[in-house]
Each structure stands twice: as structure tokens, then as C-alpha cells.
Image: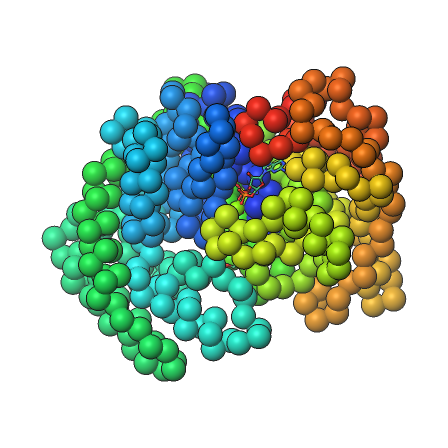
Length: 425
Ligand code: GDP
Ligand code: IMO
Ligand code: MG
């Protein structure tokens, strides 16, 4: 029997998960998304083309790989249809090729979930989470509140009545906000998309994935968002509404913890965050602006400018512990090519103490990062294709991180394209 490998983000999302899942997909029979929804934007680049996937797993461009949208994912049928329509226009039709299945137990994002998300954020004003406004929070609330609608419900004869019942509840809540809306167009698009997704095979993801394992096939679980956005362990309340950690792969697919194999933890050579919330190493100056410019740090889903800062080792250590990371993947090393000196945060000064963990009161008492200066490599690494060509100072930076984090860096990414990826160990 095989096990499920997991690939997930160790920071605040956008680490480059889409690129690496695409790179690794030839090694896997099945790629499975396990949580989150279209708040995700996973970018893939190859052959001069660029794709951004929101709901669809990033194994879709590999000819032999099957892709599953797991039970832990929340699906906006309108966005899923749009993603598939766009892929089809670009010559990729995973539905026709039988390369995409969705879990019956995955919950549906309704147009009114998005309205609730927007109404709530508007009311919070400056204290808002900075949600992607895709209706993620309200949909997971209905899931845990036992009100939600699932993909499997769409084939029931009384689906429309169930829908109306939930929408009435939402309208009642919305009436307590000063929030104008018109549902007509969205609702029509929703029902059109519901008909469309009936053509994608619905499966029980728990049986589907365990069946793959029984047959000795290889499975990779693809995370969305990042560990520091986990609803339990992230910088709450500035988090998303799902478990973005390895544990989320178990509940989001229906696999037992002892079925988890390798855990790939992916991080940027620096750090970014989009939306509100604490970010101890944030650079609110021209250095941060340079990172944003060189790294093209603008959201793949919302286009918002990402906040940028230095790598945060206490945060990474925490993420590695929570996820049981067995191998690290370092992304966007090339973005640091031009720096004379780069910095790594090794500790925080917090309430008069020096600590190396993320404190509970990170929201109310801003920790001050203790930074270690590291000499830059000042070399264009975007064309480096062999380990021997890696500049010595970049190799030193990687060795320093491996020593601090106590996990080997297995892959190094030096550009957005599929081919700009090196295997180190
Ligand atoms: P994801 O959400 O984790 O899949 O990451 P995103 O796609 O939101 O953001 C990562 C961005 O960095 C995308 O624009 C990628 O094309 C780009 N990218 C990925 N790896 C590298 C890299 O090694 N170097 C550079 N310069 N860009 C990269
Ligand atoms: P990928 O998979 C980066 C952030 C939002 C906001 C918070 C809550 O591309 O890495 P939500 O819409 O989930 O209620 O927003 O989480 N966020 C992300 N940030 N990458 C993502 O996904 C994100 N998905 C949500 O910006 O701060
Ligand atoms: Mg992203």
C-alpha cells in the first residue's frame, strides 16, 4: 500500500504551490486538493504560457494524472465552470479527458455566501480580515453550523427548495447590515453552473483516495493558502476558515493520519502576506517595495499588492512542527539576486524577552524581529540548471536554513517556469 504525500505552504500563502505541484505531478497518479476554495490562486508557467488555477488541482496539465477536488474544499460552481471554460479555450479539457472528479461531500459556495463575506468585511471597516471576498468564511460557517449544501445535493429532486431555504436564512442575516445587493444575475449563473458541474463525475473522496492507495498508486495532496493562515494555528482572526496544515489533508480527503507519507513544506526565500494581520518581518520601506517589484508580488486571485518582508525562521519552525515537514522546497531565490545583504529573522523581541516562537498575543503586542545579516550572492540565478552552478553564497544561505530548520531543502526554484527548478538532495 502506498501513502499520500502532502505539499503545503509554510508561510501566508502564495509560496509557489501551483508551480511545484505541476513539476511533481509526473511522479503521481492522483493530485488532490483538500481544503480552501477559490480564495486560492495557483500559478503555473510552461512553454511560454501562464495559467492561474483557483479550484482545480495543479496536476491538470500532466497527461496521465487524475485530479480530485476533495471533500474539504468549498466549491463556487460559477468559478469552477469559468476555470474549465478558460482551460478549454486554451486547448485543455480535463472533463472530456476524464481527468477531473469532485467529492460529493464538498460544500457549495452560494452567491449569498459571497454577499455575507462582503457585508461582514464592510462592517468591520479598518479591522477587516482582508478576505478575498469569495465567500469562504460564510460557507465554512454553514458547513460547521450544519446548514450547508454539498455537491452531492445537486442531484436531489428538492435541491432548489434546499437552496431557497438556505438563501432565506442568508437574506435574514443580510437584512441586519446596511448592504445593497441584487442577486438576479448571480443566481442565474449559479444554476447554470450547477447543471455544468453535474457533468463532472462525483465521487466519495475517502473511498476514491484509499482505493488509489490500495492499488499501490501514488497520491499527492495539494494544499491551499499557508500554515500561518490555518484557522486553529494561524494568526487568528487574520486567517482563512480551514485547516491548511497536514491534519487538514486527512479530514479534507478522508485518509487516516498513518497514511501520510512525505510532507513537502514550501516557502519563499523571503516572506509575503496579502490581507490584514500581523507580519513581524514586514518591510514597509523601499526594500519591501523592491521585493514586491522584483518578485511581482501581486495577488493571483485579487490582484492586491502583497506585503513583503524578510524570511521568518520562528514562523517557519512553527509551521514545520505543525505539519511534520520531511522535505523543504525553497522558492523565488532569484528575487534576492540583486541584494548586497539579505536578512533572516532568527528570534523575536517580545515583552522584554527574546523568543523563537510565535506568541499568542502577536496581534496585540507586535514582536520585533531579531535579524541576522547574510551576504547576498549578486548573481543572476534564473538560468542555473545544475546544482554545481549554484553560487556559493546562495548555497551557504540554503545550508544556514537547513541547519536552523533541521529539515533538508530538496528543491530550489529560481524562476516561475516549470524548468527553473533544481533538485538538491
Ligand atoms: P501559490 O498560491 O502558492 O500557488 O503561489 P502563487 O501562484 O499565488 O504565487 C507565486 C508566484 O510566484 C506566481 O506568480 C509564480 O509564477 C511565481 N513564482 C513561482 N516560483 C517562482 C520563482 O522561483 N521565482 C520567481 N521569480 N517567481 C516564481
Ligand atoms: P493560495 O492558495 C494568500 C488570505 C486573504 C485574507 C485571509 C482570509 O493562493 O496561497 P479568505 O478569503 O480565505 O476568507 O481570506 O486569507 N488568503 C490568501 N493569501 N494566498 C491564498 O491562497 C489565500 N487565500 C486566502 O488575503 O488575508
Ligand atoms: Mg496564490
